[in-house]
Length: 321
Image (cartoon, rainbow, N blue to C red; front, side, top):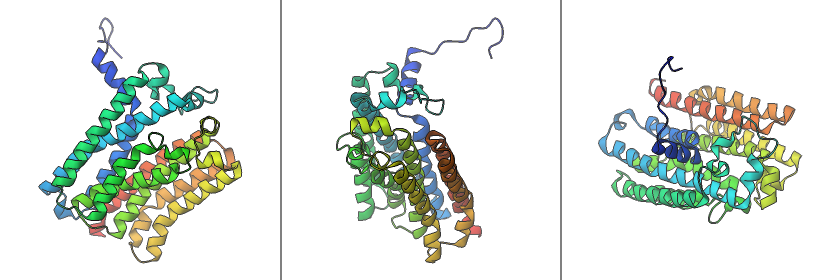
């Protein structure tokens, strides 16, 4: 609180404009996606973590990632305003503090569709440029890693823009691939191989984001159905969607338990991920009892961040276990 008799300087025009674009790209969620780079860095052998080419590649990839994620979030909002789905989903009577309207500057009139669309295209171009530099300068360029990087760049923005894959029933698959690839791509360029543990950690990251989206889509059934967005929540019955979310929850746990049973990962990793498994089961159980999709989504964010914390803790400690 300002002291009596003092004046608080108002935000400048530039500051307000930057704030609008930061909210447009959902900067809190962009920061969550950047946790993938921490997973990559801690998954490396300790002796390579401070290697110059490795750090440079991660930095360049991060610069590109800012652009790609900004484009994904921005162009999704552009489509949501154009087809009316965001209006239905955010301006309905069911809107709560769990889904604040300030996240949508296109709906509040703070930005125009033209401004947002131009920004989205520029952001995507920025991301493509820096990822090209990352591939050309990376210490490793395995074919599989380059393919994953190209597919991530091309398809990550196609959720509700371009091919609009979420409108033809492929949105969930695309989200799982994209979130998983945000771990696999930089790891391939800095290390070159793909240990089972890294694949497991990448899939945990992917399921973390997918299960946030799954409950969000459950909240958005009416708005998405009205504009032809074919999410599982729209296409399935209420019971069918509950079964689908339950199946995703089970698969999330099997990503850990399956590789352990096969002898691919250490039992210590299972121990390290017990908190995320407990929270995931609590999230689904509570949703079955109260049907509160937005609250389940909010819990999903907590589960996702807990997942990352468990993975990071294990990666740091594994060389002493």
